[in-house]
Image (cartoon, rainbow, N blue to C red; front, side):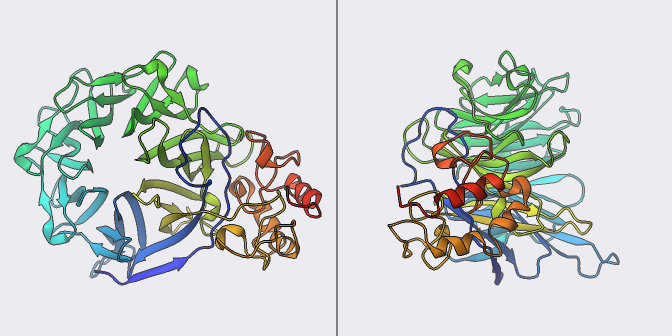
Amino acid sequence: MFNTNRRKVLPTVFAGCLVVVGTAAPIFAQTPSYAATVLAPSGSVDTFFYGAGGAIAVGTAEFPAIGSPFPDARNAHAILWNSATSSFTDLHPEGFSGSYAFSARNGQQVGYGFIGQGNRALLWTGSAASMVDLTASYMDSATLTDTDGQFQVGGAITPNSEGSSVAFIWNGTAESAVQIHPVILAESYAYAIRDGRIAGTGSDFDFMQLGVYWPSATAEAILVRPSGYDETSIVDIVGPWAVGTGTGFATGGPRHAILWDPINLANSVDIHPTGNPAYINSYPAKALSTGPGPNDFIIVGSVAVETSPGSGETLEHACVWIGPSTFIDLHSTVPAGYVLSKATGIDSNGNIYGWATDLAASSDYIAIRWSPVTAPASCNPADIACDDGTPLAQAPGCTNSTTGPNEGDYNAFFSAEGFFFQAGQGTAGIGGTCDIACDDGNARSTNPGCTNNGVNEGDYNCFFNNLFLPCV
């Protein structure tokens, strides 16, 4: 195991940006905020989390290539993070040039490695020595993308697929591989398997993307492209929903996160966050079921945020949906200087995993865990901190006046990480501790779905309009 080298990042308070549709069962006693922690194995240069399940998260860490004549050369190693032991395990198999882990569930981890030509589909059970190569003899290249602990899914290139990947399912051995590719498509990939159901994405012979849903490994695939959509995708399954995206006339052009009902597409729900015009596209990645109801879920992913109005230039922010009703932009918890972030997995405890980058010439990448934190209830919009000035989300159970805001709230609002710092973040400041109001100064807590472009004059006015008022 690696020694853990962790750097703590201050948590930030968030609120749901918009009620989109319906209501969810109480997944948390109240909407949580999230605290971000940077995690990296000792000696690594760049680190990524790509998936999670149980108490495990998996991804890839890049290490300096020892002995290489190129100073920037790196070796990619598949890694496993165990939250129960707070430790990393290197899954990289001996003899491979590089390896990547994408998903973990029920004791298994899956991904791929490369040795010679082509990818090799790899299955692990907690250690590098446990690796099993599931690449069948007739496959030119193969990758595993998900597991349910018994079966594995992904894609492979075969002599008959003419250079395109086609979806496969495995049962723990190379010989068990079964092609499930719909022949009507040019290519396909299976991205998730849940309770025997399989989700994926393919493209037709016009190179248009299509979500693909298999009710079982032996059932005929259902192609998801209802009227009004030019392209669709499916990346996961939760409850009755196939989680993915859609773009076309129905979305006005941008790509929106969609809860597809593959059995009755008319019941599908667009969960793209509205109310903030800077949110252009939304991309779900993975989902966690939190109960028996159709709205009992958490979905993680990213949202493309326009860097300035009308520019058309966007940067992705890690985000989370708690049920269909609450959307949270996680990016303001990311360390300063990291301008792009993505959430790629969620474990059974609700911890979210992903990565961020500074997009600098050196392209620094960090792996991040976002942990849910339930903050003490705020008694009015200006009540943002404990009596000692610590933001409420950072100190659950702290002493917080029940008579109204006080000096602690004032100090937190004007701290080094308070109003002026968050106002300088632009749209990245959405959901920060000082983002308490709509742009017009009305409290966000009583005006869900209002226009909110981050921390600005509206928040300043709202704070002082409520600072001297009692709890409500």
